[in-house]
Length: 210
Image 1: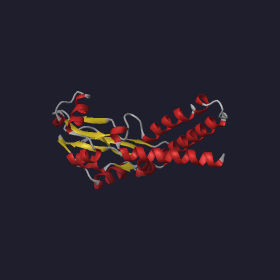
Image 2: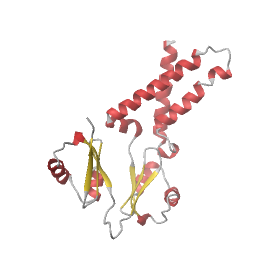
Image 3: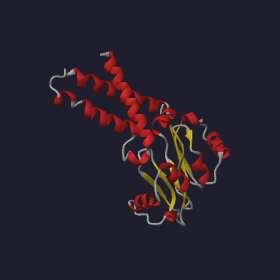
Image 4: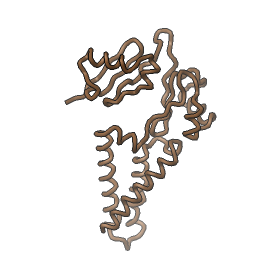
């Protein structure tokens, strides 16, 4: 029984590693761990259905192991953002201030045709109409529209779960010195910031609940 459990864990880890190597294009709307969990549970749960000679534990035990591992992974991702980035990756910017980052597209193995199709899916027909476009960790494309005259820059996340998004700071013409002054002004530390949003003119934050 111990060997069976260990084999299940090894297969779980192997499939996650394989999906991470495949990249974001193959993941669709699911995170790697979610896709692996769904795939393994559906197959493991069918063992006893397809082969009645197998004991019930042949399906129950591996499914319980996978569920327990997924819950444990979720807890770790919530508690340790760095672990979440290691397991699931992080968003990749493919359009910055209307300019397509061809190196980022090549890294993700996304062609120009794929990019344009994703943009059209969000009613954007010209990359210059996107101030910022990111391929999220689940493979979807998120777009910040180009600024309007009444709003010179879009509202972007600057700090998330105590982690500074320096790329967004730079896009808004802000820097670490500005962030430090903001935190001092509001008597905050990074660890106390759940979410900090803003543009070049105005910012607002949400503190973590104790």
